[in-house]
Image (cartoon, rainbow, N blue to C red; front, top):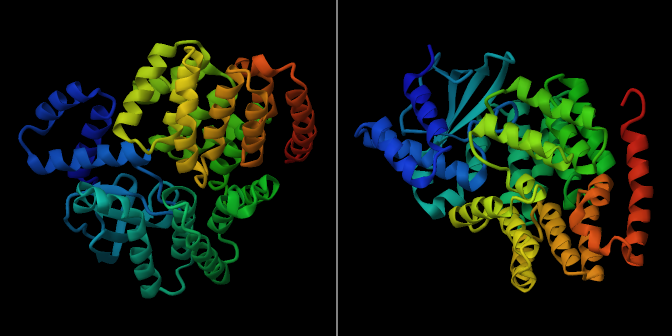
Length: 431
């Protein structure tokens, strides 16, 4: 039987997260009806969602960062689609359970963060590090648990790419863990998902062809794996829309309530220039206006600015919101103010895997100001760090002011040749 506490908490969270601050407070007053522990749990979920974008993640290879009150689950209890099999380990950060995914019929590891972690800012920042201890406990209890090693490797790569990108030690730890997983189960699809994270990053020299091969190998070993990763490759390169969207939509078919995967589909529509579909999908999934980038492309600058300022106010570390806000200022003619923001954004973003999105916005800012050399410099950086999206660069009106400049023409000719090579490899029959 599903856990009524969790189901109620999740229902309140999904309703609350779609509301503005004032409406949200009033709604929580009504929905929680004086239940302080319930209110605290919902607010913890909202904080996690706003700072990381991840709530209700799938648990097929990594810990699902689900937040609950500090109480133990019992064997046989169901949370969402996962049935608890046993307690693997526990510590100050929370608990890890062995569970069965009742939809995909496989064993997974579920991590439940203690609300004490999310209530304290410093501990919230270190929450990802807690995965290390908890999964280490899992592999200590079962040294032949290959999936736990793969999950640990995925968590390490997440730290390396997003949470702690200035610390190179995470990659070495990820490599050790994935090698251990492979030694135990060479046919484990999640091994290739981890390697995708490596090659689609600075650590793997942005080897996009190798990253795509790893994603395809994951899918070949397990038909439920690899689709998320292939969707990223297709839409970041601007390749076949039908194939790319099919891969991203497949991830939602496998886990239709996953908010991160829903947001990924919204982003895919933006990258393909299908702005109305992006806006409609955002409304359908989240009942919210946006996404901001689609509004920017459609010239709805005031609406986009409101969303972006709200995002930055909630999380000053939201680098994509900050770079998009600089773009809005440039489009409004506030070029000096926009460019003044660039150094601070770049300094924080330089090692983050989302760097290519930030540098593309910055290239657009300089292009709007007619600064061709700076614009081309950051377009090259965008292409070299995971987004050599020739169709996007070719159609974007924000680049029109420099489009006839020789430096831009030369860059686009070089990029087209490179992009044609990707197109030939990824869109050939049977790929």
